[in-house]
Image (cartoon, rainbow, N blue to C red; front, side, top):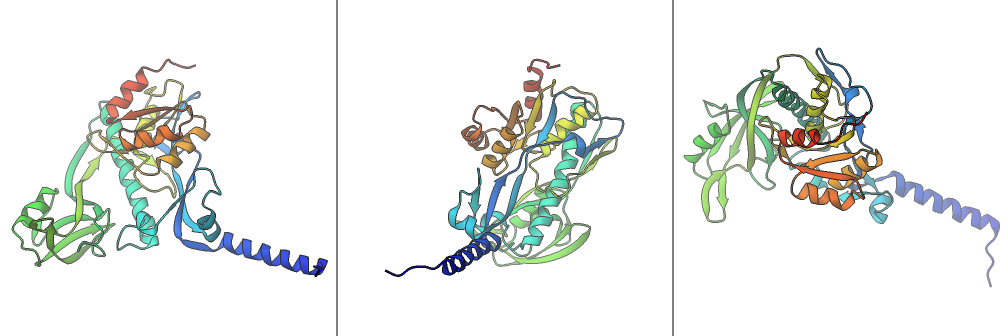
Length: 335
């Protein structure tokens, strides 16, 4: 029988510790989504003529920690409550690197803030001017010609020499194109203009319609009747739009929370519609950990996912901003 000396045990333990640390520190190729406790919105919002609402109650937004998973996290998976591993193609849009993805998230957040302020002010009866200025690229379809040429949050302002003010202004000239022809798109990206020459292809599935593979939404130049500043720091994406809109109303004296702690997630559109967002598992856990009273989520799959992890948290599914306000108005006032 061969005995292991204390010296060998120490060496073996040191090696195992070093290996474990390396597995914990070094990133894998996959991403990990982690819950983050819901945060109050009021410290982030400043409205001209408004003020932070007094307790109790408050509006909360939920976000998700997204980073590269360590090798150990990838191997073991469930090291954190609510953790979820995602493949790179599920997180980073096609044709975009990690740094560009982060910039896209921040641009989406800035756009959602402006729309949220507009929706809130309109609900208060204030005049908001919104003029269509182009076709916003909401998504780029993997494997299509636009990959690497266009990115989400780009705004198409011209097709060839024709000015674009709405998605229809893109669809119309594309109808007369044949698959395989090159189309020049002038886009606004950040503060600069760029021209992307993209060869079209047939839509497929029996259709010969020429496409480049993008999903478009209207882009607006929004003029607000008063100054609204929202500083969310490094938090990106459009999912806090609903929470921002509610807090703008609170800051202007509308008691929408009625003394309750209200969390909300959902992309908000200029017409008051509320669109689905991702990572409801992590966001619901974050809302529950913050001890909120009610969590508003987009109707449909988002609501079904939230109810799986609510564990007693009141989940309210909504489709429009007026519906949220009507539901809040039914809450008993808490003092």
